[in-house]
Image (cartoon, rainbow, N blue to C red; front, side):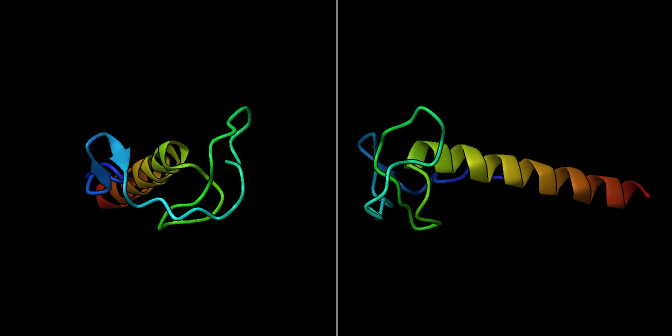
Length: 67
C-alpha cells in the first residue's frame, strides 16, 4: 500500500493543505489544521492518521484472505 500524501509534497512542503482556521487536533501540536482529507489535523499528523488507517485495513484484508 502506498504512503499517504505521497503526491502532496513539493520542495518539502505540503501542497494539499487547505487551512480550516483550526489548530491541529493532535495533542501538543499547534500547527494549522486542514488538508484535502479533513479539517482537523496538520498535514504531518493527517499523514500519520491515514497511514494507521491504511495499515489497519490491510491487516483486516490479510486476515480475511487467510480465513
